[in-house]
Structure formats: structure tokens, C-alpha cells
Image 1 (cartoon, rainbow, N blue to C red):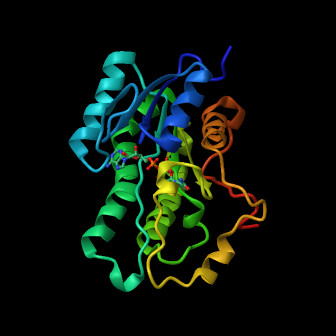
Image 2 (tube, rainbow, N blue to C red; image 1 turned 180 degrees about the vertical axis):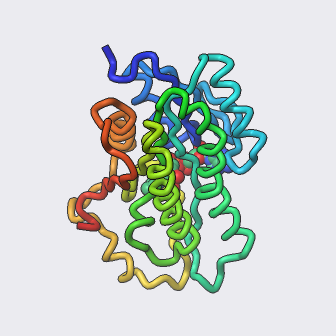
Image 3 (cartoon, protein in one colour; image 1 turned 90 degrees about the vertical axis):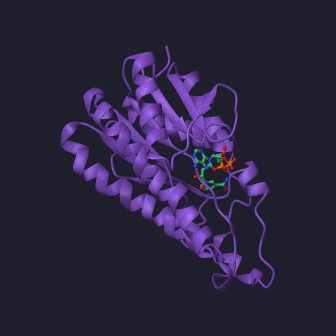
Length: 235
Ligand SMILES: NC(=O)c1ccc[n+]([C@@H]2O[C@H](COP(=O)([O-])OP(=O)(O)OC[C@H]3O[C@@H](n4cnc5c(N)ncnc54)[C@H](O)[C@@H]3O)[C@@H](O)[C@H]2O)c1
């Protein structure tokens, strides 16, 4: 018997990388999973986390189809690496909009249902929200924001039996990382501080397994944490 039998989960950013691995991991533990994304993916419904109507419709779909909502995993995210002088305002806003406001919007839309089930919300932050990397101001700011959003909601919802946690992976082997371009003029020595002493990337399945743990009763008192998976990069 899986650890998440009968639980209904909603995962954003489910079409690719970490989101797809989270869907697989939750299903393997018996959860009923609804995935959402702006791009097509196996079993994914359309979901734009920056659109209040889209997130509301997605939560309504989960409840209408499966009767309840126990787990929300906010995975959708984007990032672009640039020198600070070169960050266009629109790009800054877009990164904050998807990573931070999108996490807020889906959590806010779901929280009424999550209160009913004494469920849980898990946010994909990043090690970049704990220890900054250069040429990534908007991304680092957004992920730092996700961690504080997580902690604030955890305190606010604790007495209702709702847990809210964040996961902070270092570099995970996904399309996001493979498409990552270091801008011209970057000082490569500034990246040394972010290097993992283990010298390896994080496997998306490891992030999926961490989501399962945080969603399960094994983590019944874990609340408001920002759980780092970084091979000791920030140790
Ligand atoms: N890959 C890494 O090294 C790494 C490390 C730490 C944290 N993260 C975080 O993990 C999350 C997933 O990253 P990934 O590596 O799987 O990236 P990815 O690019 O493979 O997947 C991200 C998914 O989010 C979706 N998405 C983007 N905008 C969206 C929107 N407005 N609404 C709904 N879906 C949207 C994309 O279509 C894509 O399917 C992101 O939040 C990212 O910041 C990634």
C-alpha cells in the first residue's frame, strides 16, 4: 500500500523536468494526481499559474472530478540569466510573476479546499533562494520570496492542521538546466561558491521522493521548512 493512497494532488509545471518527476513519484505512492502546465504534457491539463481564472478553474476541476484536494505542489517556474544592467523590466516582472505570484495564486485558490482536508502545500523554491548566484537577480529574488511565502503561510495555517513546506534543490538535470545560458561578460569565478562538493547534479526523481516524504504522514510535524537538496553546496 502506498503512502498517499486516496490523496488527491495537484501539480503545476507538470509537463517537464521536476514537475513530471513529482507526478510519477506521487502516483507511485497511490495518489490521484492532476497535472497542469502551459505546455502540453502527458496527462496534463492547461494551467497558467499567472492567471487567477486559470488557477481557480484548475482547483474547481480537481474537486469536481475527485471530490477533494489534499496536496498542492507548486513546481511551475522559469529563469533567465543576465547581467543586472541588462535585465529588461518585462523579464523581471515575468520571472516574479510565474515563480512567486504564480505560487501565491495557486496556493490561495486551493487553500479553502486544503483546509477542508487538512492537506499540505509544497513549493519548489531553489537553493538560489537561500544562497544567491550571480546574473540571476530576478530568479534569486523570486525564490527567496517563495521561501518566505512558504513560512508565512505555514505559521498562518498551522492551527488548521495544514502544512506548507518548500524544497530548495541545487542544479537538477532537467530541460531548464540544459537550456541555461551564462551571459557574455560573466565572471565565471563567481560560480565557484555554488558548486556542489559532491560534483553531481540532483536527479529529478530525488526531488519527487522529497515531495512524497513532505506530503506523507511521515512528515506530520514538518512545517514551514525550506528543505535543501544540494550535495552540501550551502553547508
Ligand atoms: N532544474 C534546476 O536546476 C532547478 C533547481 C532548483 C529549482 N528548480 C525549480 O524547479 C521548478 C521546475 O524546474 P524544471 O527544472 O523542472 O524546469 P522545466 O523548464 O523542465 O519545467 C518547468 C515547467 O513549468 C512550466 N511553466 C512555465 N510557466 C508556467 C506557467 N505560467 N504556468 C504553468 N506552468 C508553467 C513549463 O511549461 C515547464 O513545463 C522551477 O520552479 C525551477 O525554478 C529547478
